[in-house]
Length: 109
Image 1 (tube, rainbow, N blue to C red):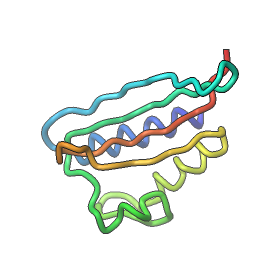
Image 2: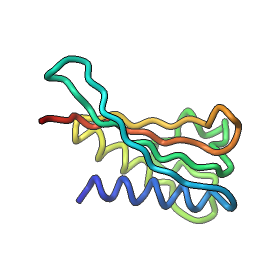
Image 3: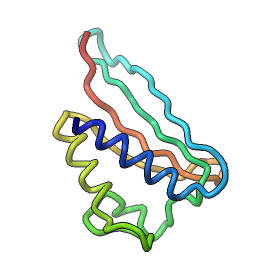
Image 4: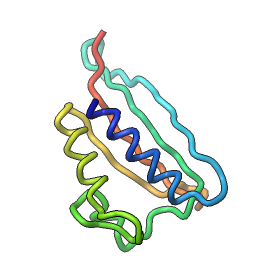
């Protein structure tokens, strides 16, 4: 249920900040060893991207440039992902259009 909250929040943000363009989800499985695998989930949008001013503190409380929202969603997402043994991060897309939010989760057979 909590991981659904993470996906719902990230997708909601992607749609909110993408007036025109696309939002996509992708997954990969990365294996460091045969016993150490993780799934990587990425939500990519072609929206406005992440303002450089807030990028370093994006996953902290009350960080937002939106007039809609409290700036707690990404902070909560970080807590949920880390509680499940994963890592969450974000970056602006290299083509200058939008951002990608990614997180990992341990994966077992």
